[in-house]
Length: 114
Image (tube, rainbow, N blue to C red):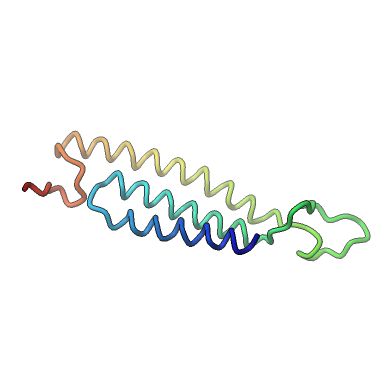
């Protein structure tokens, strides 16, 4: 399970960085979204990856990460998803306004003309 999650984090990070280096603003927006998903998945996995474990401490069971899943990273990821959605929507509106004003969606404002 840890290998799959680590691989997913690596793929999302790699794809996000690659898209951040592209010349179009929409690709940069998608790259930022993929990076935020990778960070959210990393924070979520910090709270221990337990399948079938309850996130509540039961009486008689030691309160450590071997017996339950830490709910704090889950709450942080939920908050980060909401904030990421809001900033992505704001960035999309700014991107559309920039395209309307400049006539293109190139990052530096200049299109390559062959």
